[in-house]
Length: 215
Image (cartoon, rainbow, N blue to C red; front, side, top):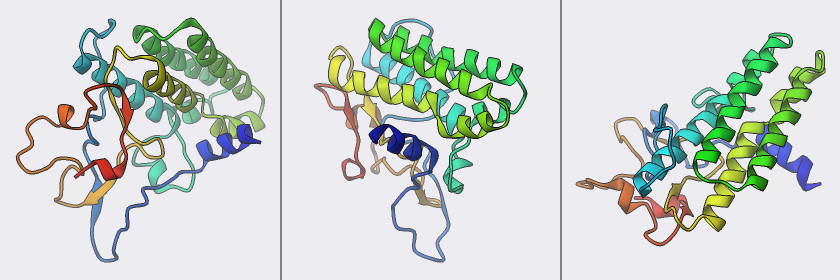
């Protein structure tokens, strides 16, 4: 039962629950704690917490863009990503999506994720590929089965529980970035705060942020 509820929760968008009074203009925050959209990384194992945070930020950005395009999915009642769009191309689209999903597995390998975790991530990627090649219904099922977000959740769980060498700030999993009032800027930086990376990172271990942790 939990398996199917997990699939549905991946499919339906959980919009930011912060109250938005009528008449006010809202936009998406540029950052959340130490997380910000990151479109590149150093292709090596991280040696410092800053490097680990940057690699994680890149992993999270890739996963969300593949399975739930930010600022598009958060405005819809369901999630749709690059993988869902290119999968509409028969056979070739699923192959391209499979190769792009393998990139996320590679990023987890850079983190030093154990073999059993990489195997589970690879299995999710293979399942997603074979779902996508089913004619017609496969495209619908591909929108429901979010392999990249599932793999991101596996990586986050490992970072929190079994990777004490890293101290990373992990945002909530139900949205990419929260909404803020226009002109308010980031939802997470206090006036005069010069180093939000350290402020919102637990000095002892990797943790997942909650809205109450932020300013």
